[in-house]
Amino acid sequence: MNILMVTSFPFPGVTGSPIHTMQIARGLAERGHEIVVAKYSGSGGARSSSTWEGIEVRHLPRRDWLRDFAELTVSRRPDVCYAHGDLAVITAFPITRPRRLPMIHEVHSLPADPGDRRGGAQAARDFLARRLAPHLDLQIVLSQRVAWELEGRQAVARGGYRVCYPPADLAAFRAEPRPPRTDAPVIAYAGNFFSYQGVDLLVAAAERVWARRPDVKFRIIGGTRDEALSAFSGMPASNDGRIQFVGRQSLEAMPAFLQDADVLVIPRPDVAENRTTSRKLGEYLAAGRIVVVTDVADHRLIFEPHQCGIVVEPSVEGIARGLLDAVSDPESASRTAARAVRAAEELFCLDRGVEAREAMLSDVVRRSKRR
Image 1 (cartoon, rainbow, N blue to C red):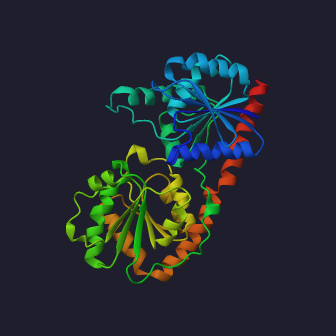
Image 2 (tube, helix red, strand yellow):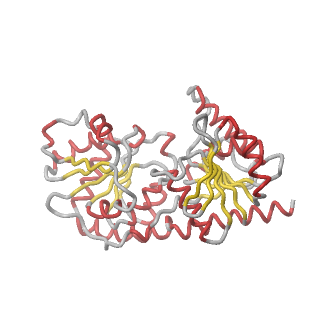
Image 3 (cartoon, one colour):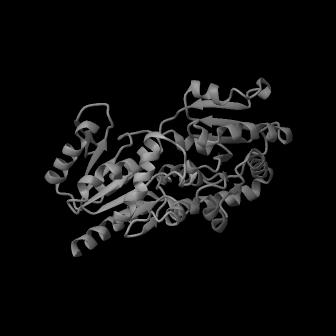
């Protein structure tokens, strides 16, 4: 297949959605498909072309987007357009629609709730994405919860949707599952400090954990020093070094950091930004440690049938209880961690994720040729 991938995310990038898009592009290219990435660069920057791991990347600024993107579809003659994110599908649709080029939209975030009072570009983007959905060939969604929301809003593609979790590079995780240390166990969080990540909930929960287990240590991986100072401004100085900030780490270093911990936590609140399942969850499960997550996205749908971790209500009290449960029974935690590794392989395997998307792209191309 000749695939035109469209994105507005940094490419290459170092965080969630950019890494996800890059891994899919690399996987499809390794399977012999021709890939070109059209990167919508907004109002800044100039038109340019680069190569990432042998994949051509066209950086196209907003002012020339329609002309340049139209020329790209003519010169490259793609079989299918694969748009990652709302902005990608909105900017590509005016060109792909007249040319009857089939389009798949990978939905990276849930559109705003109907009646949301947010103004500006984000609200307009959400509105347009919902209006365009019925004209698309297929949607790939990163959680069943998003699919249900889109169905309720009648914003599903004409070819329906497929739930396909964001794949992670599980081969980087080699350690065997082990129980939490009985003395001074380490609870780790990896990610940025945006409000939707729930770091403020975790900081507040730490106080409640220490009331029962003063030996527990917290390790925060990610962000910058300024972000850390802001995020932990409410933490009393009496924590005696029991919170360690290690800063942002490379992708290659992350498996070792995760596997050095005893418990891994995703403390996200239940807000629209957290309705999709994160790639980070797959890495957490693959690390062979017990995982505590709040009840957002598909966390409960994944954890309950696989019995692979602890799901708690998205509150300070819920997070604290889950973390205390995780460190209180090491042998049970070890068995749960072993199931987590198996769940990661089943649901978040990179090869399987790419294979599933390859099959969806091929099916859309076949159906378009019959029209």
